[in-house]
Image 1: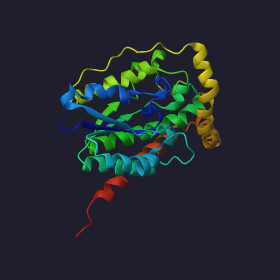
Image 2: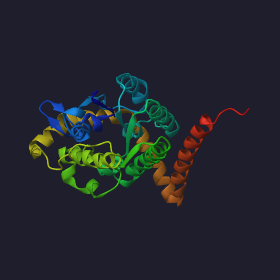
Image 3: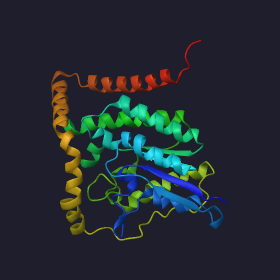
Image 4: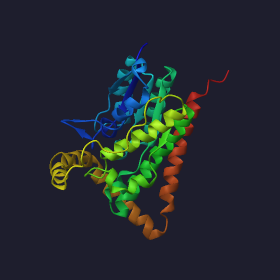
Length: 285
């Protein structure tokens, strides 16, 4: 009997950043693998194509072709946060790319896993005028992911809400990536959804960490080395625009017109999804 093929696509979250095992990252997707199989007769072949820093364009142009070639039975596509951290952010482009990716895997008959995610500004504890633009962008991405997941029949995890977001024990030193306990929480929640669908037939992943949490000194060292570089690479093009967006927040707040920014973002999301619906309609006879 052919093994069940599970392929994971995405960015650093799915790559496993925050859950180190030896010199490598493990992460929620790898923790989910054993829960997909109930024994040697249904073994699982797991391939993790996720890459730190990936955006929706990378998933569409690089990861998706590689994944399709593997013929996955189950595929996870968890992406979008890095798009919100770039000056090139365009919700229309994000929606179009995700629609293509989701459709490609569903056309191949794969079970599709998706998730909406918390906004990075809140997780980093940024001041309100800096956090609100990022939150607005992440809400837009989450709305698109939710709508497209429903359209394509995905198994969708609402990971943008819940008590786990404020539980410091769930998160790594950088406050953006889950620690081992947080990655296990994601694996648990995905397993529960897949179990309801009759896809996950193995044991529920353990919620308890296998390894002790990093010491404070180890966490500070990671932040001072790899963590600082990670943030710096993503702020190179974001910071100037983020300051511009923050200035707009201040101006609208002073004028009492802050609601216009939220309304504009909502209109952009609606327009992006409407454009996809129009594109899918057959030409008139």
